[in-house]
Structure formats: C-alpha cells, structure tokens
Length: 267
Image (cartoon, rainbow, N blue to C red; front, side):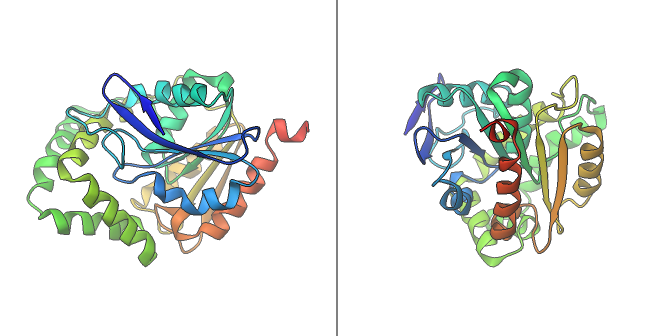
C-alpha cells in the first residue's frame, strides 16, 4: 500500500484481523519494514500489524534532502487514519524508537503503549558546538571507507546472528550511501528535539546484551528509572537489532507487555 505525502509515497503493509488492536512497527536507520518479519508472523493472528518504510528506505520515496524527523508522527497518524484505527501500540527500533516517543508526545490519546528496541530516550539537552561539528563532519569521514566495507562494518557492529547481519548489510546496500547520509544529517534534529516530560504511557525498553554502542545500556537503566510506567529487559545473545537476533525471547516479552496494557485488562 502507499501513503501519499507532499514529498512522495510511503510504503506500508497491514497484516492481521481488521478489528484487532493495532501495532505500528517503525524500523531504524538504514533498515526497512522486513526486519519485523518474525514479529508479524507471531502477532498477526491476534493483532493488526502495520509495517512501513521510512523516507529514503526500502520501497518508500527517495530523499533529496535531509531526513525530516519531525514529520514522521504526522505520517504515522495518516496511515492509522487510512486504515480506520483510532489507537495503536508503537514498536520502534533505534531511530524508530525516538519516532515512537515523539509521536506519543504529540498524539498521547492515540497511543496505547511504546515498545523500544535498542532505542534511547528523547532528551531536552542541546548538542554542544563541538558535537554539532563532529556530527556534520561524520559523512566526510564515512566517505573515506569504501561503501561495501562501510556497510559491512555497520552490520557487524549492530547485529549478532549471521541472518541479522546479512539483512542489515543488504538493507543498507539497497538504500545506498547517499540516502544514508541524508538520514544521518536529519538525525541531528532528533538528538536535539526532546520532550518536556517523562513518557507516561506503558513503556517496554528492550536491548540486547551486546548493544552497540554499549553506553545505551547505561542510558536504558536511567531511562527506566525515570519513567513511571516502564520495564527494562536485556535479551541475551542479541545486539542492537534484538528482535532479529533473539526473536523468540523478544516476542514473548512483547506478548507479556501487550497483555498487561490497560485496555487488555478491561476486556
């Protein structure tokens, strides 16, 4: 299916019973909707799973300028409206986690809960001038590494299992380095965006024990402690793409979380 925007069409799929609760899966930078294949197969008999490709990724429109992080919540709402869904639980990996948080902050009444995979909390801290400079210079440093080696290094650092690494590398290759740089430049917007208050929605924070960068695990603990309605789970044998590295354990944790959401308890 296609969701039209002023820049081009976003690609999305909806799988599952029409009357079932909705799960919106948002992938991370450089990936695409296919990273959630194990989750769709596991949950689509009792949930309506919406998977989509962010701009510049997969089958969505190609970017001609930096990725616009702040437009993504509106696009999620547009897709939910298109399928007649009033609410959804948001599942986001890495950058997708930040998009989920921002969406919940802007549209709190349309979000049942948030599941973060390898993500970090949106902060209100501004980047220093040095951080801004280094962030803008990174694409120049990246260009010094041949594209194939560049994507391989990313995949090895982010995923643990051979299948997950292969998927990561193939997704990046399909995307291409120029599109990746557009996303990278747009990411600075998300790092400085922030939210005014802790997330009040039910929140499941999931990380692999081999998370990269490793400081995300320390940040996850702090995020969990500062959030009133959250739970932190570290999955063994998994990296940044924990849902792909350890799908069985991941799906069980998510199923438990979903069964404890307020609307489930009222049924």
